[in-house]
Length: 417
Image 1: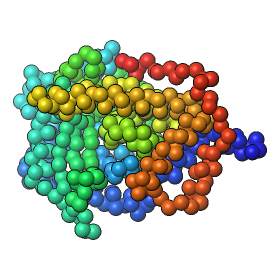
Image 2: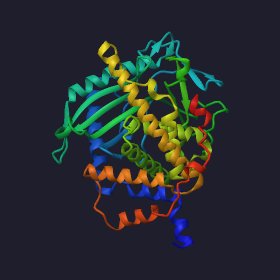
Image 3: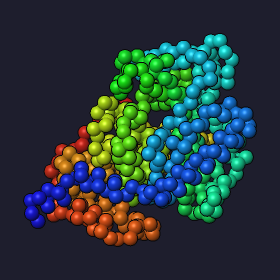
Image 4: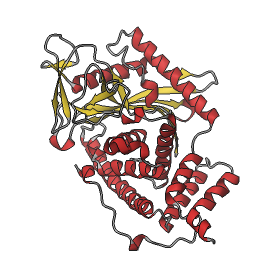
């Protein structure tokens, strides 16, 4: 092998980028996905209006939270979101806490279901939304598309401190709801959206540059430090930096998430290979990177997002369990979480070493082979051809087992907070 060929085949960063691009969805399937998403969202919004729901004007951006799932395959809209932004229907006064990076929203004059003790309360909002969405999916039942596909709707939620935090609307195809779920799901966290021109953030928050310095948006959402406990009146503050990048960077981010999902699935890390986890990990990546986010490569996006999934303690966010039988199930789930978390950590260590050395080690080749084998076993591998040959050529090299000779990966301190 020539020096140039060896350099090319040992380019870990470039290879990850090529793999992510290779598994991007084709145009036809993406159009079908987007069409079905807008049809489903239209039915949900229509039912909210019929019910005269308090949220009848709040779900206009639901389409951006959609994900198509089919086994190891995942597909996202280019403008994907994990947050569902809502505008408060009442005026508030804001009190920011610089140390905790939170905001408290005061409303002293208007009685409203979102208020509790004259404060905007996330528990009130999320419990109300859960009730409304449960009612909506029961009323709609199923939605039939023009091509004859029928989606069965259901609702679930993931809870934190006995309060819904992640809302999940599932629209799985009727033919395989029970066996191998395939369809569209909307996993999102409620976020209150504010205009920087009307409600500017304090100067200690980084805001991506804008033409006038004020035309930005920011979110307040209900996840505050888990170690401090749940405080329903305190809202975490986030500037959605992924909004300020161009379409090419958005496509790159979606490709990185889709490849990460495949890798986690191939390693049987199913608790991490889920729409909420990968999308929320991505938002934490952008938050941590700040102004450097647009400069991150596909491999850096993928690895950093995986790190946030593993080292942030998302095990507190779970489905409500109460009786003794479910306590046993919780213990079993915790064991599964630990096993899958260890496999994910091993994958993180391996990918991190490859990134820092920009070299494809044997462990990387093994991970890639597992992913391809899993795809073939599930009967979803694409027909082999020039594309597959190119992938093999990119990854194939006379690499050496460098793991033992490298320094252990240092976990960023903020992931342990």
